[in-house]
Structures are given as C-alpha cells and as structure tokens.
Amino acid sequence: MSGQEIIQEITSYLLSMPVSEGLGLIFGILAVVFLIRESIWTWPWGIAYTIISLIVFWEQRLYGDLLLHILYLVLNIYGWYHWLHGNADKESELPISNIPGRNFLLIMLLSAVGIAGFGFLLQNYTNASVPYWDSTTSILSVAAMWMTTQKRIENWILWFIIDIIATGIYIYKSMYFYALLYFLYIGMAIAGYLEWKKLQKKQELLSLK
Image (cartoon, rainbow, N blue to C red; front, side, top):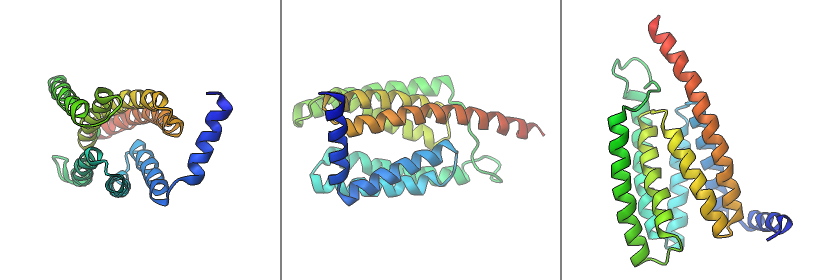
C-alpha cells in the first residue's frame, strides 16, 4: 500500500469514526498528557477513557477486551486514590520512585506466565490473528498500569515496549490509524520518562531541605 493510500485510509477512518470512539481517543490522549506531567488529572481522564472503551467493546462483543478494561477501570480508581493517599507521611502526594529490582523481576515473571496463559486462551478459543502478541500487549499493559499506580518511573519503559509492539501489530493488520496513534504514544512514552526523571530529581532535592 502506498503512502497516499495509507493517508486516505486514515482520513476515511477519522471521517467515519463513531462519536464514542472519537471521545475515547481524546480522553485517552489527555490521560497520557496528564500522566507525563505527573498530574492527578490523569486518573479521571483515564477512567472516562476506560468507560467509553467498555461501552465500545460491549457493543462489538469483544468480551476479552471488555474484561481487561474492567480491570483497567479498577486500577484507574485505585491509582487515583493511591497517588493522593499512598505517601507514608500522609502530608503530600505519592512521590516518583524506582521499583526495586526484585519486585520488577517478580512482575516480569508473573507477566510471562500471564502472557502464556492468556495467549493460549486467545489462540484456542478466539479468532485472534496474532494471539500471543495480543496477549503480550494486554498483560504488559496491566503490569504497566500497576507500576503507574505506584508512581514507578519504570512504567514508561513498559509503555514504550508495549507501544512498539502495538504499532507493529496494527501495521500487520493494516490498521494504519491505530498504528499512527501508537507510534505517537512511543514518543509520548519517551517524553514521559524524561519528564519524570526531571521531576524525580526535583522531588529528591526538596526532600533533602
């Protein structure tokens, strides 16, 4: 497919996009923008995005995605609460931190088990075209969401990996609008990591005063 045909397909998709999907797109991007800024507003926008997604998946009978987004909804609500009240001194919001190596290895081990199990289900009980790749992005997204609720800076590394894989999946499926969207998310993940690094250093300096 030529570049012009890809642009035409993306334009056609945007013009025919249902209102619910358009709102979901806007809410999802806003959630990431506020997350980059370490703003508590990432969570209400994330909740709005997830609710829209639940409606879309229910209408499309995508029950696997529906179940995952119910979990995402729970994690968004928990993340909102934990950012506000998870700090040990209870006097300020939760600071940015690094995940201990042992905890990271445990999350990766659990993710590997989840990817294998969910991939098996997708391969044998659905018509998923790339079951194990779909499983990888889904399970790693849960892991990244959990790390985000804890304000672990490494969440951006996982999102970066997820976005690269998702971009490849959507190119493979000729879903060029979503490929472009996730390519944009790759850049946002890099920006988020760099911004959180700066914010983390500022927080550490303030804690020494």
